[in-house]
Length: 375
Ligand SMILES: *Cc1c(COP(=O)(O)O)cnc(C)c1O
Picture (tube, rainbow, N blue to C red):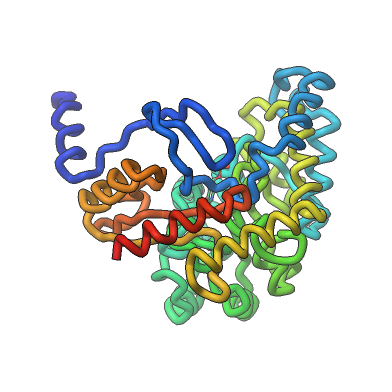
């Protein structure tokens, strides 16, 4: 068997699926420099503009001064410092659960949490559009995996009716590439009828939806109906890292069983220190102001009274065509990458436009007229 990597690469190129790292030479909020050209960035998940806020930059520097640059060991060995515990308490309060646990990324949360709770005798039922980390985690757990078409409640119910062992439903509050919400109230009702548990990934809803930006479950008053609240610190929180919020019993078990926590060095305390500040900012008056700004941009841009989220996809279909549109937008001053297979299904390549509180009204107006011209 030969290692013909050149042929493999050529095949990806021919299908319009080749990817390359894009260097951002300079970042000033929503304006970035790529290949020496200034572009308005409509592809960031920093929905509230916190990543470049003076408050978080200051908090991170202060954290480094107080706690040093690195944690030095895994959380269970000697890597747990005060900021980690303060952050976990802040996240538990924010999510109104008994406890929370932080990981080095949202990806690591999924990989640690799902296999810690589910095994070969159990069943995991996923929405078809679930994020890759949820799919990977389900596979790693060895549980039987069932998939229902996106937001399809009837199919979900049929799968629940025939599922073996302990059953976990896994879905996203706001879908990352489509920007729509899951029918949470209906899923909760089904979960209760069949005695299943629910893991809700709120990566794109926290900071954006609900009172204090607490997410979709909070917006619908369903917080105490979700067993596993998963989220990331890397999107609207403006930093990096992930968390799961749940009962004390679940969190204590995860500390014992989640391999991506146990066998990985703790995130720097400085980061946890800054994340405490991010939770406070996001859930306080400053967060409310930024959310107001964000939602006013979103309704102007989408021309809908209440769009579902800060993600506004424009499905183009063909992979090469999507690349062409993205390149043409770049020549006109916009950074909006083409999202292609395997991130989305083949033939559904798209522009994934994301808007943030940090954009100016003028930038939003420019994008709106550019998108109108595409039609
Ligand atoms: C980004 C994302 C993750 C992973 O979070 P990271 O902190 O970036 O690893 C998980 N789930 C969804 C839905 C996401 O969009």
